[in-house]
Image: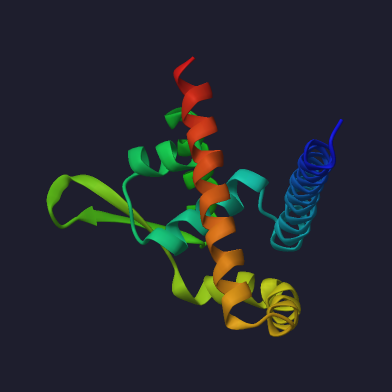
Length: 163
């Protein structure tokens, strides 16, 4: 085997190992964030699905139950239970939709968001430290990687949902 082919094979192996290493770290990150969310939920007496729905509403703004169920991947009947618990706990309110009086919007009570923010502050500060170790070009690459990885996850989810 000539040295060019050997070098190309070595480069391909190294790239596969690096790609697999990244995938493993993404799985580890997912597991760690799941554990963190579970701990936050335990501190606030919220189930994982409750916390996920709160996060979705907080990030995307008030939305109808159907849109929330779709984004959260929950059956509408399951979402009804989630919303009932969140409303009883003072986390959300259901208000008439100004553009369709027959529909409702669910919105997070802003004062309650601070409780979640406080519990996430440790991660936020730690991530500030991690990001401080990278220059702007590296952060741009990392942000692009995370955005594209999120889109890959969304595509895989959509494909599984259709089958």
